Length: 476
Image (cartoon, rainbow, N blue to C red; front, side, top):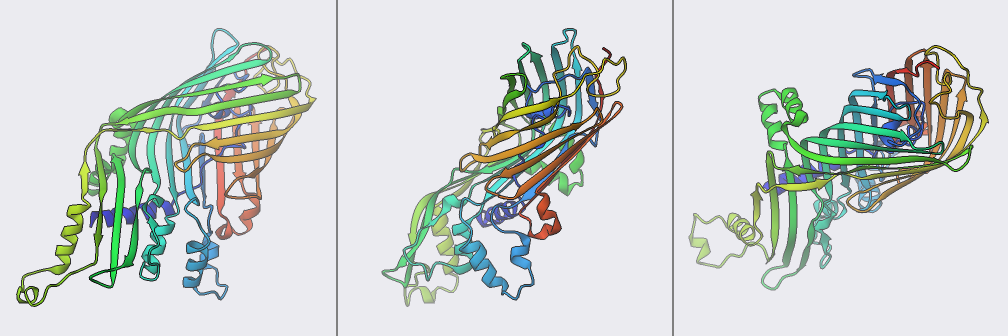
């Protein structure tokens, strides 16, 4: 049946998901232009910048909060079926998630306006966002069945998953309001390429002793699966024309939405800084290439019932199909083409930083490094230490991470940032970011969970970020 196919697809998407992207290394790294995308109110002192298409603002992460590939496939003498039952069925819960965000900038440009305290930025980036939770009760039912679990209710609400591929067109304004306060905002237009979501499912499946047969099974379901753009991409795959379809839908040919980012940086004193940002306060209205599926109803069956000798004398009767038709009539699986709205996964960042070891600013008349002009630049310090908070809104509630960090500048050429992050995916996540400035060329490289790189298969989490920009700070 179609519901079985959709269930298989959702399980596959959950298992291939990637970990939600917390850009703790990039956040408040003000030497890097892309820091404006995670806090539009970051302190800036560029005259202008431009990202190099194809190698600017690329980021990706992959991981699991439950098990790693090594846990399941390591040659440790433990039978694979035993691992499945102990690690997956018994070891994981319905709250274990596989989720993620991947981004790639297509265009990114920023410039200072006629007023030196105002900085503008705009661009386009592609984003993939996927989340799924472990289908615990579904997995138990599929692997072990329900005959030995009489009267146990299997929760159909364990199916919670969503994903989207979209382009984001954005324009931001960053303003230094005073010597201690910088505010920023960013308007966004979302052009959705494809979307799927099934997050508000309710119901149960239970097996009990039967009255007219050995067992009686009850299904009570109220489930929805909503999609947009899926059929267009499938049709393009059949015609081997996927790139053209994705480009068309990503350039306002799909479903559209609006969003907003807000951020600030406030200096409590010369050396202490507090920051915060709220990202992707927005929605997408899906009206194009929409197809939804529903499963709603309540039925109890004791299986195939045969009345002898009458039914035995009917050679054309398909007892199994009669059972299927009866269940589908009572619990109808239907599809519709109704428009729907999805809300973006809103993200919150906040940090507190203490700086010391101020660098001497040079009054140079050239574009030769970060600390060359006194006019628009904020005070730079050699060292910075502090803490950061990250939260993202997810179907089963907010996902949170806490980070401690240390930043260090080496003259006008090199800056680094090291982080230690704790979240539900890892308690040993050490990250490192490097920013290199060679004249007007800016290169940054960042990676998380470095301790796990000795055995990637045993890691539940890995990530990287990189970018290449051209930056000008102007003359004195």
